[in-house]
Each structure stands twice: as structure tokens, then as C-alpha cells.
Image 1 (tube, rainbow, N blue to C red):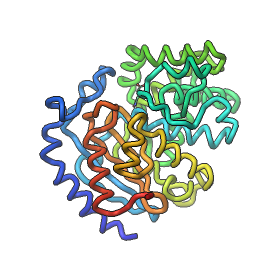
Image 2: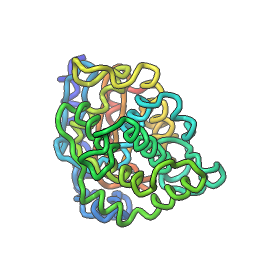
Image 3: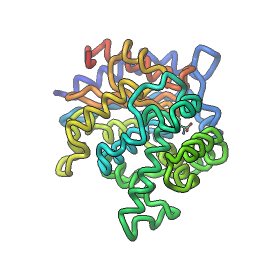
Image 4: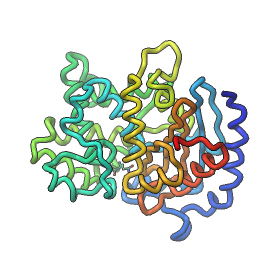
Length: 327
Ligand code: GLN
């Protein structure tokens, strides 16, 4: 597929949304940046980027597509991938695969469901995945926990991201610290699961991993590239590397993105966009057109469900303009 045909589409989306980008964060109909994480509250809401990478490895981008931002829950996609690579089906003993129908940081279902999170994309599920990664890092022997505050899982996450992007990727320590200082609900979720025996490691180490994965700083270009294995049956985005996941696992990750990747907006997103998506409260959204391309949009102002307001509009415009959807 010729990527040149996508560049005008991305330019047109930026031009169409330009008036709304200028209004972002101003007034109740124009979205709000995630203020519950103090370091994110300072981000300028009037930024917008969009980038894509085709199965053939061609890239296109428009707007602020090179500006790094806090990827937040988009990271859950990559930690899930790492855990699936390492543990296969054993992962599902601790984590479900059903949409929660609740906000991403909700505690209510955990009590009724004995500390087993509904899916790996709500906060509880991602914290449970982080616990598995901490265990895996410990088990992988000497040297595995060097260099990153005694937490080898963080090194494993950075190594995966660097390998997928073909360039170094870093944590934003200020954002990670900001979450550690104010992430009371996440502390509650982790302790609650621990009380049910569903977290094996020290809660502080598991949360340190989770807060850092959320604080990864990446641009739309880097995220579209890193997620590109999802549009090519798990094949590594950069030639010559082994596959990231197999075809079956890739299908499953895409299915989970469609059903759970945007929390309690997942039904609406399937209805109006029809693509597997994973969002984060930094305003990023990764979307996959299987066998064709991976997209990343970013606009920091969020709607009431915690998804990027203009990011969703941009995806709707992209699907309407190109006809690319899984349905
Ligand atoms: N770090 C955020 C939190 O734990 C991630 C939430 C999100 O992006 N939806 O609340």
C-alpha cells in the first residue's frame, strides 16, 4: 500500500480539527486534561498529533506527531504483550477478558470477583500484569534486577519499547513520581488484590513498575511504530527481528483492545470507529487496522470517559475518509 496516499488524509484531519484544537481545554464541551495526576495537569491542551505506520513499514504523520507525551494506559498494551510472550495462557489464571463497563480505576467489581480483575486494560488488570512481570524478571536470574532501582521489570519494559521503536525510549521520572505521590486509588487496588492473594510481590515494587510504565514518554510516530506488530500478525515492526507475538496472540490482543481498550466507552468506540483501540489519560490513542496499518493520535483534552476527545474525532474522520475498519 502506498503511504503517500495517507499523508493527505492526515493533513486534512489536522486542518479539519484545527478550530477545535485551538479551543481544547476551554469550557465544558472542549475536554479537560487529566488533572488528577499533577504533572499531567500542566500539559497544554491545544496540541494535536497523528501518525501511522503501514504493514510495509512506511510512515506518515501530521501536526505534533513528533512531540513526546505521557503514554499512560497505552502502555498496558505493551506490558500485556510482554506478559503474553513470557507466560502464554497461564496469564489468564489471574486476569479476565471481559469488558468491565466501569471507569478504568473502579474498585467495585474487585470485591465481588475475589480480586480477579475483569481485563488487563483497567488499572487493576494492568497492576496484576505488572506483578507477573516483576515475578518473571526475578526468575530470569542474576543481572535481571540491576540498574533500575532493583526492579528488573522496568528494564524489561524499556528494552521491549526500544526494540519495537528501533530507538531508545525513557520514563518521565517526574510523571512517575507525581503518580506515586497521588495514586491513592491505584494503591488501594493493589492492596485489595494482595488481600485476595492475587498479587505475589511487594505492593510497592509492583506499583513502582506500573507508575513507570504509565510514565513512558513517546511521540505519535514512535507509538504507531511500536504497535505495528499488531497489524502484521505479530511480526516485529523492524525487519530482521524475531516476531513479537504469534498470529493467535496478536488476534487476542486486538480483540481485547476492541472490547476493553477504551474502558466503558468501548461499545461506543466499536460502533462509531470500529477499530481495536487503546487509550491513555495522557490523551494518546493507538488504533489498529489489521493487515493494513497502525495509527496513533494524541490530543491531551479528555472526555468524561477518560479518552481523548479530539483523538476519537480524528479516528472517526480517518475511518470515514478511508473506509478502513474491521467491520
Ligand atoms: N496512570 C493512570 C492511572 O493509573 C493511567 C490511567 C489511564 O491512562 N487510563 O490512573
